[in-house]
Length: 471
Ligand SMILES: Cc1cc2nc3c(=O)[nH]c(=O)nc-3n(C[C@H](O)[C@H](O)[C@H](O)COP(=O)(O)OP(=O)(O)OC[C@H]3O[C@@H](n4cnc5c(N)ncnc54)[C@H](O)[C@@H]3O)c2cc1C
Image (cartoon, rainbow, N blue to C red; front, side, top):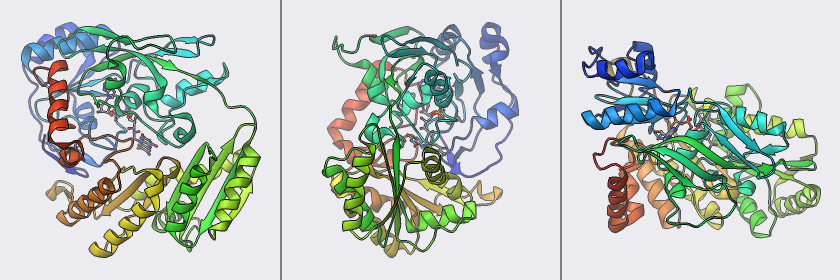
């Protein structure tokens, strides 16, 4: 697929005559109007395909998904599964000759079992909507991306989404018991179980989680729920003179057995950008660490964390007011829009072992100095997962939106190699998509890369599911 970053005007093409067959079966669910086609050219990564897809299928039933895949198989037409399109890796965008299969309209909660602590849902339900309904029953689904209000459960599953609370409550893979998946040829396959335990056969559910729409279309999910955490929260806001000290504090807090529910780190340029965006005075400090502890031991754990913070030269303030804590994390959640307000963004997602967090921040500073650029970075520090952002000038329409400058790719390349040397991984939660596939082989090695491609062929022998993404 040919893509660019930023906005671009795609040429209008006449509808593909083969679509008449699909229209006869699915009617108005097959959209070829400019509004639908243009929306499907982009996600939130900044990537935009240069050409419109053939059509967007707005499926509302499993049968419609199956009919789409049977049609695509018969005609060898590529299909891009799509939820809410909030992905940050360019994995949900459709382009020339492709169908985009949106399951956003399949948004029903089919069952909630309090006794078994599980929910059965369709893929298009938004994470935040599901959790609002579960809260009435004293339950929640733990995956907690900062995009929870706007991203779908199916998208969270397909990207193995993480988020703020995942440091204590786990990422998506730990919260999915079973799936129903439509395969490339239209067959419907059930995998996984409703029981807490289950090891029958290979764990296809785990394989599907994080597969970025390349192995099948998730049409139903059985989710593992947790009781809502009881007791209060304590939220620490700590300012540090340098980002390395803040990173060391985060690493030490975990190493000494404290289990924060959330631990987020913002470096100086991230604070400055958010401050500008919200018109708040956040500048003038080297870094900020936000820590929240919860449950019956919240205060004692907060005391331990504060002692570690102060021993490393941090200045900490603590509040037990839940609303004030939420206000601080809402400021953190503004990082992405604050970056978008500055230009075109290439957002990275490296993850390192927690003890390597200070070294990874030091590597980012070295790369900033080498290339003469600023790389504002926030981190889910308790998970060792960093989001360094490269921001560059928007291009004009004539340049089709300003592709990533070579200097930025070179800096990103150094960043990934530094991460891999520290025992880390290319992506902690956003996925490979289009943006990181150039480094996939570096991490997997030749044999691992070849084996993964073979696995893809088993599920999708014609290569019609989200081709060009991941591999
Ligand atoms: C402001 C902001 C904050 C964010 N914060 C976080 C964060 O904290 N943590 C995090 O992990 N991510 C975060 N994200 C990224 C994004 O929200 C997640 O990746 C999310 O899981 C994508 O869900 P979606 O419904 O938008 O999926 P889409 O973007 O539509 O699709 C993403 C991928 O999933 C595939 N897919 C979608 N639905 C299905 C399905 N039913 N079956 C098969 N494949 C499917 C697509 O093909 C694509 O590969 C953030 C994004 C934004 C804009």
